[in-house]
Image (tube, rainbow over all chains, first blue to last red; front, side, top):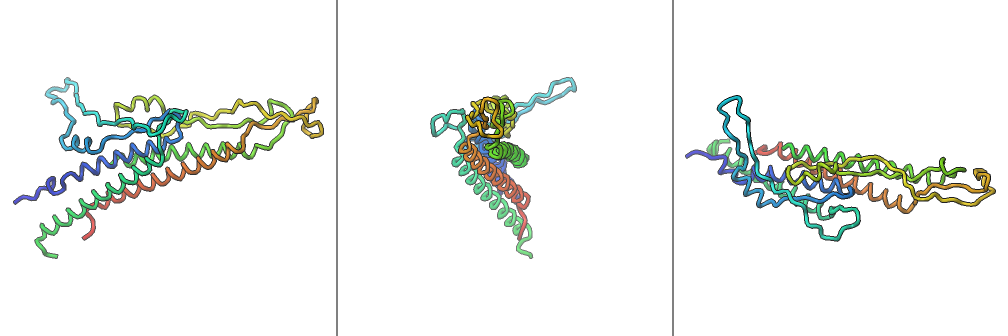
Length: 133
Length: 143
């Protein structure tokens, strides 16, 4: 019986990757809270996660050095957030409290995924050692 | 994991932009009561102009690049100066007028509070990113 790391970790490696990307998007929103004309952005996490599981990146095989290398990647689904209050006059749509809240939630969920990975690794170690200390 | 390092860049740019704003506010407040005897010599309120590196922000629907804050420059307010008729003032011009800066102290105080709050928020974000990074480095450790 082989131990499959991919199966053991499940969706968590991709989740951690997406959580870090989302933290960048949210940090950008928070940083630009006072910038005129800036529009808040975010992506739909569950859609991005299901996308990340079936790798969207494709590239063409090059059989000759003269071939042009082509690789394509799906749009990661970054969208503008629907503002929850009318235009404040400078075209900025960042709601600082909401963004901070999202950032905090994102961080907690990130920690949960990291904790899950750590626990899985320690149980895999136990299985490998067969109960020996 | 490069995303978390980008958070440092983004929050860092916001912090420096907010500190420029705090600087101009300090300059405005400290010069608010200066008096001069001509329009040209009078201090004018200075305000920084922020931009989210707009061209990059507009193309942002197509790529994952996120943007920091850029201070485009500092502009002087062209609100009218406060002109006061005070012939006994030592700085009065030959018609008896003195000129005071167009600094609105209330606005500047509000600006100061807003800038320092934003600065704090961005420090907290950078700190959170640091914690997330160090947790990633410690995946699988222990036991």
